[in-house]
Length: 391
Image 1 (cartoon, rainbow, N blue to C red):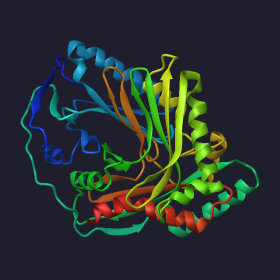
Image 2 (cartoon, one colour):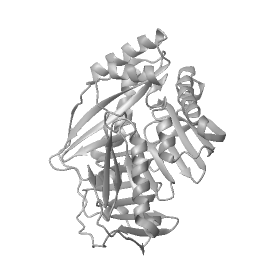
Image 3 (cartoon, rainbow, N blue to C red):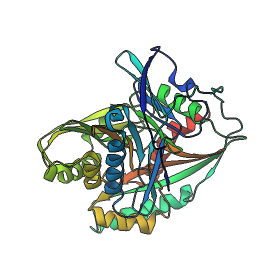
């Protein structure tokens, strides 16, 4: 499905008062997009254009569509931004949205970009969820533990090195959940994460899949987690280090044909509100002429969200997980007209639908994994959205 623009499309820019609470600006929670980090970022609403993609080649389709849209804007293209959220695999639906109104807050300045005619927003108060109730998802806790135990057995037989298994958790409130409330809570509680929403998928991810600035590319790889203590023990654990090394190596292998001057820094311990991760930062220079979405297609899924070897992990996920991930654990973020952008991995997230929220969490499983420990790790990861909804 595609929502097209009027024949004549213009992009308007204007400054707004800096320090405005961005979460109060959208008129309601409908058709809202955002990407925030450490107090700055972007929030938008309305749909000037919307494109959906399914099947193989979604990244190539999205790249062509965005390039064509930018070309149609001519001299006005400089202010245009698209928000994207891809499905975990080609069976799902991916989306690219150009908001009608976009507010950017960065470097002491706030700017409004409007695609098409400017119309004053009809603001409404942000509503707190009421009467939130919780229930098991498609893969109940006990069944998921059994799936992890089965995966550990297969790993010990040498079928593969690592697999990532996910589970879900359901929430239902007395009325529609206001995404502005959830986003504001996530941003305030997790300033080190990238807080996002695209097409109802809302979360706070600590993992940057790919960031592009000109020919410079950076990434932050996370794998190996602990919810107890300060996380320093992760550095001394062979199993956590192995899990982390698999994830880093999968990224480096994927970008190698397209990049030079690849550098890594880590692993180090990234401490968040209720969990710690092993983290490695990667930087490189693009050499092949591939665009950001093309590089993303080569990288996703890394071992951090799928496993390794990639094909064997995908097969085991399909066999054991019994879960439609949708757009969980897939690239999410934004692109601008110059080809720059940021794509995180959709983690610590939930899909909103009226009064309902479907939360997702997953763990990397290696041969030394303890199924009971992995269950508790998913509980710790659910806490990011669960605590925000219950605030």
